[in-house]
Amino acid sequence: MLSASCLRDFHPARVAAMDRLIARIRVEALASDSGVWVLPNTRFAFFSILLSIIFRVNLDENSIIRIDKVMKRVLPTI
Image (cartoon, rainbow, N blue to C red):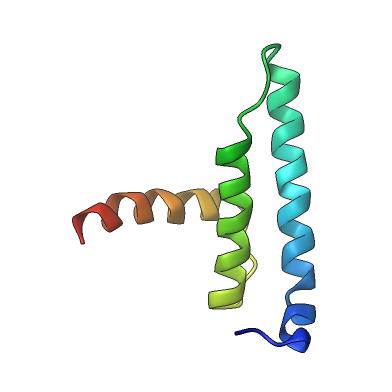
């Protein structure tokens, strides 16, 4: 379980992930007249927070997407 001080340490990661989430939803909304997919974008934000917490690294969006693709390919085989 995370203590309050640990949660404070991850504040920048949470802020960065929420900024990415808002940016991704905004771009998708501008590109589409019918609406946006919230679940994949939220999943991406949550995954980026987990990567920051577990590995203590801040990755760019392309790196997170590549890691996500590898994870999706590897996990079903386990």
